[in-house]
Image (cartoon, rainbow, N blue to C red):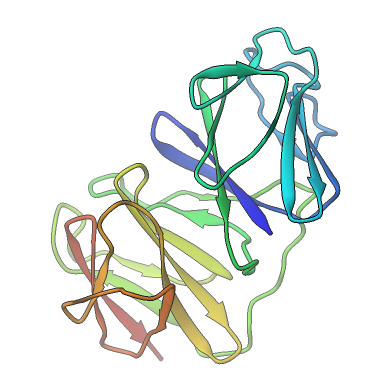
Length: 216
């Protein structure tokens, strides 16, 4: 199972799990992944899942499809490949198939973080029936701000630098490393495995910012 992380100018705008045999990408609203930009063709590209492999094929688009800077017609995607369509970058990541619904990026000094959906083709996955929780920013320009963890997955950090996710599961909240050479830390200990369960009061350090996990 893989996922696509769509970004523009270094800011993540949506995350999409690849769950279908064919996933279409383009400007037209009937595509599975809609990118409303004139540099993107109406039917720009299609992703095909063959077993555990995911291929991307350019559908004779006007401006072409690029992987890691090279124009392609059809190519097998590898973990961490970056697909470029116009000014948009789409990173392909292999993962354990966790529930992804919406993305929230925490950028110091940007005001309330945006919450962006995946469009009508990706319905709500519903939230697990556990107590509410939030993240309180302790340092940096956003110090004092509290972000409620209302989605199944909340993504925090600086795209291209260091990004982590907090997933709401039936058993509690789980913190995981998403991207970046340096791993985030919990209570001063760098994350060594794929993920760690969070407890109220845990201190998280991510992309140079300290924050505290609060539940209940």
